[in-house]
Image (cartoon, rainbow, N blue to C red; front, side, top):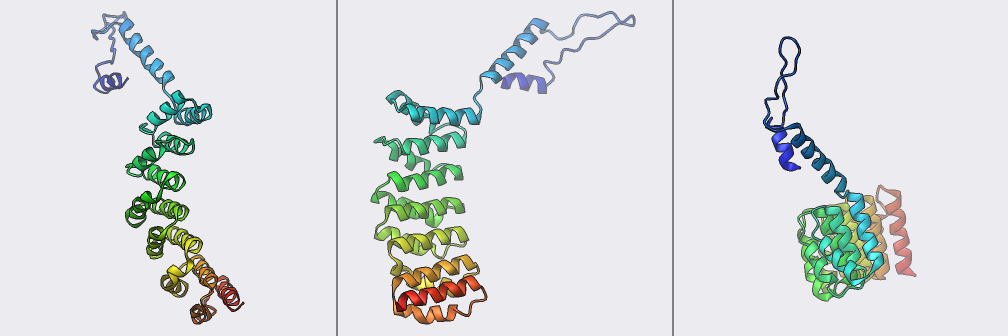
Length: 257
């Protein structure tokens, strides 16, 4: 079909007929016969009809996953390398949740994909099927991937995996330039080890430009039970945003009991 389009673009399939002054049809100048042209056109239609749309490809992954037979699972493995990013990411996601022994290796490969959507899906899936050995991979993604949704998913995965190294990576991400990544990091620190992020959380509470971040920071400081947070929370009661002021007051009450 591609070759057919190339020839059309170059004018080689243009069947130009000419007429004499009396309007009588003369011999076609193109060497191709009409039969050949119709055969090519029919082949083009056949290929188009047999092509699989993105929606059909994704649906086929779901159907294969529901079947769960070894043959179907092997087909899903192959679809993790499909040219369409949505089909690739769907195959990775389904494979990761089929309790397949080699699923983590496909998810790790997806973490290196050129497409950010596939990387984001893989990062989040690694939180479900990964081990402590994957914390370093996810930490590198959280610190260095250029796309915010990928970093956000890496933060969520690290929260699921836990461990001291995951906490360190999440604390580092409290300084991320993107709001959604900072929020994901705050949630991770709050779940794993609230006290580990005391200094950066205090800074976020007093200086972050986004009120949602300041609210979450106040809540985590309050959950530490550390009286050292009281002066910082008192300052936050002067915040121009009423939600932040309320969160700071609630955090102080939580510490004071």
